[in-house]
Amino acid sequence: MGAQQFYRDTWAEINLDNIYYNVESLKKILPEKVVLFAVVKANAYGHGDIQAARTAISAGASYAAVALLDEAIALRKKGFTEPVLVLGTSRPENAALAAEYDITLTVFQKEWIDKAKECLKESKPVKLHMKVDSGMGRIGVKTKEELKDVESAIRENSCFYLEGVFTHFATADESDKTYFNQQLASFNELLESFEQRPELVHASNSAASFRYPESYFNGVRLGISMYGLSPSREIETELPYPLKEAFSLRTRLVHVKEIKSGEKVGYGATYEAKAPEWIGTLPIGYADGWIRKLRGKEVLVDGKRVQIAGRICMDQTMIKLPNHLPLGTEVTLIGRQGNEFISVNEIADELETINYEITCMMSNRIPRVYIQGGQIVEVVNGLF
Image 1 (cartoon, rainbow, N blue to C red):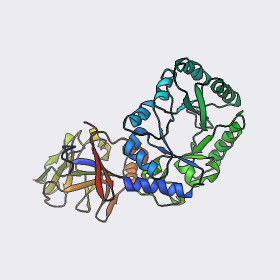
Image 2: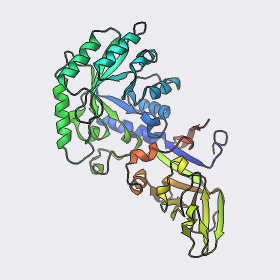
Image 3: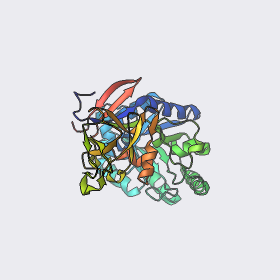
Image 4: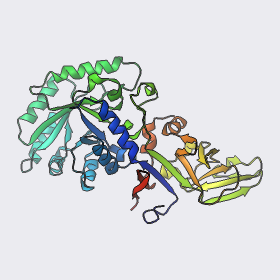
């Protein structure tokens, strides 16, 4: 598979139908005039930025959102023509570049406006969304005075267009609603300070989109759940529709050998056979994001769970096989094989982290194979 595009026996499969379903399902429960932002930062959480963005737009999203101006420009250079919002900070010196590429920037400092206007004198206007810090503690205006100062600075200059305002919830994915309610109240209070409220107001992330219709305003941002993953384990029972995971990680056996009782495997010789065993080698390691802490974790071979044997290497992983298996046998590290399923959450639990981190940390050494309608529609090798 994909011999023309990559030359290793490890790949990630991205199910575009599942991304479409997850986006469409949220769109169906939103009021008609609520704009859906598809968050595709960090290469769409490891799934592929342009592929995820185009799929989301076809499923009903209106806007893409990224973290960095670099990510936004990358989308434009790949042919994405729909609106793109940079959620994080950008240099004021790059405002004209954003205008050139028709990219919307986030602002929250009057000083930024003062510097950016000097760079926009011979440029077309740049669209802006103001960020409000309602309690996340990262970036954003915190007071009415700050908001008014930034709004005035923007509206006094024809080189800016204040299209939107937004905030981000810190605890929307937790059972306790107290802090969420405090943030929502703070955001609502600051909204009243605008001389002229921007046309787009968005606050809901995936979790808030599922749980709090009062936070919809007229825009929501779908991030992690666009890819079929719950924002947290705490709210899995509150999801309004079943999510479908889009990410699978697969590889193949490239070497199979029988070892004797007492023989050792891997760095540090930490694994010792207690009896004659079959050991298989997989061409994936911690340089790919399949990190050493997953030692002892199970993977799927022939629809059965088998254990990783010894320490995971930079480029290779050894597993204990139930019997001799032919070279080229497919091994699933994340995803479904037969009746067994290893979810992204299962890997996250093993690593004592969150599902976001798992797909994000899979490196560009792993080719992405895009599946739609049961067929391969695109293969991307991040090394070419």
